[in-house]
Amino acid sequence: MKARLVTLVALLAAITIAASAAAGPDAAKQRVAISMKNPGDGTFVLRPLQPGTLKRDSGTVSMVYPKPTTVMRDGQSVDIYRNTYTLKGKRGTMSIRERNEFVGVSNEKVPGFDFTPGVGIGTWKVVGGMGAYAKITGGGRSGHQGHPWLVQQEGFLTVP
Image 1 (spheres, rainbow, N blue to C red):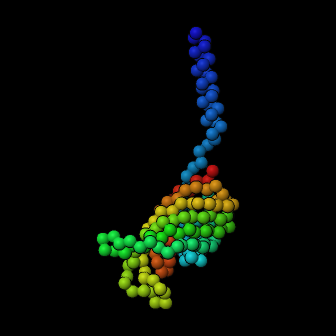
Image 2: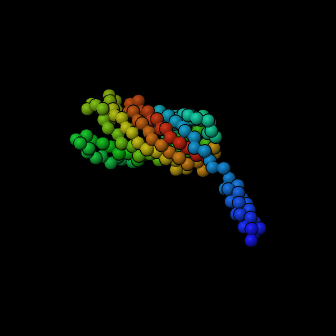
């Protein structure tokens, strides 16, 4: 009876170890920052904020943004944007979907432009990628400044 119990425990331990080995190591999350300038047709820089698989990259960024939804919160007009960015860098292409809320910081339009200066905050996530960004997942939070239009996205990305 004792021999059977020892055999059963050893068998269960072997199965547990084999299952763990087959699963492979967990992919590590890597903290990154993505800075964009004039994201409608501008440039980006991806900077790792901690060591990991992803390396620094830069290139062009394009954006699709539908007309915003405008809501009123405590008397302030808030424009809600749902943007899709395409980053084309030296290491690959990454698509990011973002939801941000933008508020004005002035009542006057910028000379030569059809908008008032503003700031925004939002959340983003990766929705596709190629090259070094194939099968990448993750996302984070973002901050925006209007004119010059700057975007800073920070968060965690995982490469399987």
